[in-house]
Image (cartoon, rainbow, N blue to C red; front, side, top):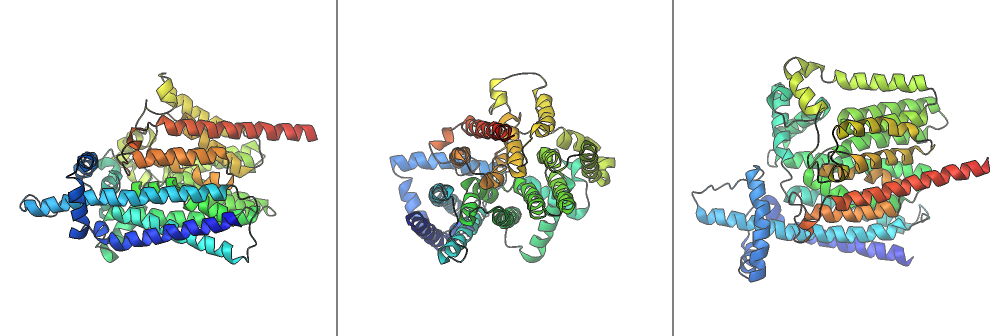
Length: 486
């Protein structure tokens, strides 16, 4: 009871805090000059500490300007207005960053309280309903606040180029090496651009992309709650651990990448499979369809399809056949672009490697030739050795294997294990949530909090390895218990 009341109090404080920010920070989100907000910043940067803080955050503002994410509307013709503009941008990163950091800390507190929830309060309980409502409102609000306040990362520029190409009928794969994704996402970008031009011309395209991600997160929450209900898991715990997880809202609201879209497809497939246990053929068919959809949306989750097929189907020939059909469908999506864009498709999609190689994980420790191809082979084989009947845990272990041994890393990958980890929470999940949160809010392409910007990639990798080791240990314990019963 005390824990429940404390959760409600924290969520109410969070909601009030975000509401105050939305009222006071309206000018920050619209980019309009407001002397009430600018004057405290001007006084702050006149102090010794404030000057250091100003220099720190100007690095981030300069990065945004260099990447074309922000542009002073007054140019150099009005130095006074240009100065006002950049003061407001400084206010944005300081006030907006403080708001998101404090929100992240409160959210982590709620997560830790809910993580120990073993039994659900009766569904008719008003407190349960109140907590769920507060979680959903706060989770959606913080995503919109980040989306409206910050310009996002450099992918927003490339996404805008791809969207324009989709609307004009040009072949994006022949135009740039910066589009490394499938045609499905290209069609989504074109659709979002069309909606922006017709209905929401006042907002940026980057906002549209990231707001779409917010809606995807909300749909994922809905299916997580359906799975939780089907498996008898606490609804409030499931909602809090996912929708208030800073990794989720920092990647969705700021970065705008679409790993969460692929994960949504996997969640829908898992829900259908678990819901239709008494109609196994239909459940397995839907699992295959949506796992295939996830791979087509973002092909760096192809191993999840292998794991789903291996867990749900006994006949090896049928697993192989369905996987082959999925691969054919995936390849077929590129056919309309192949004649003029085959070089771009091969080099920039099929052979693409994420950045920061040598700074994260296995590539930091080992400098071996062909390590990338050894890792890819491992992704194909790992899922075949998972013998557990718990398909959710198997899918989680597959993602952790990917995160633990990948030879290329990107910030958006950090969101991959969150949804499945919510359904199988552990100390590893909590440690990972804290480590990745601290790393994200320290990054120059996120909140760039002083001090935390010194954290390295391997802070996250070590938490992944710990989580993965816990899951492997749990797998062995389960197998031993089965053998003992036999």
